[in-house]
Length: 111
Image 1: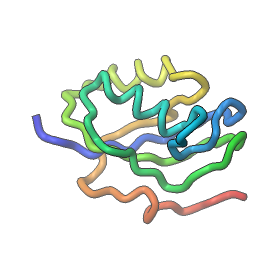
Image 2: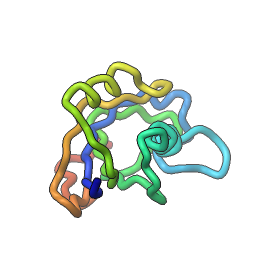
Image 3: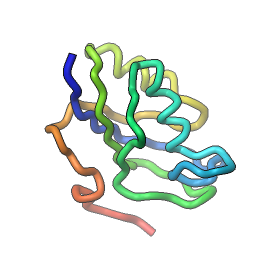
Image 4: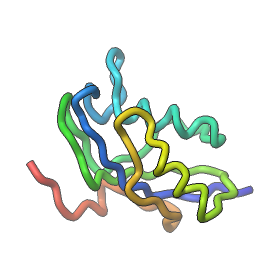
C-alpha cells in the first residue's frame, strides 16, 4: 500500500481542549486526532492543520491533512464520523492530491 494524503474537516467543542496544537500538558485536538489515527497505522510525526485555536475555542470546518497508507472504503470514513474521539469529530473526509497544504488553501478565518 502506498501513502495517500487525506483531508479531513473537523468540528469540535473546545471547552475541554487546551487548543488545537499538541501541548506539553493538557488535552489538545491534535493529540486526540493523532491518537485516533495510530490504530489505522498512521506513523507520522504530526498532522497538518489550516490554522490553530486557543484553549476553549470551538471550531466547525477546521481543515487538517495527514498521509496514511490505508486501504479505505466508503463505509470506513462514515464509521469514524459516527464515533468521534471525545468532543472532536469529522464532518467530512476525502483523499486529496499529494502534497495538499491545508494552511495554504484556507479561504476563511473567523475571529
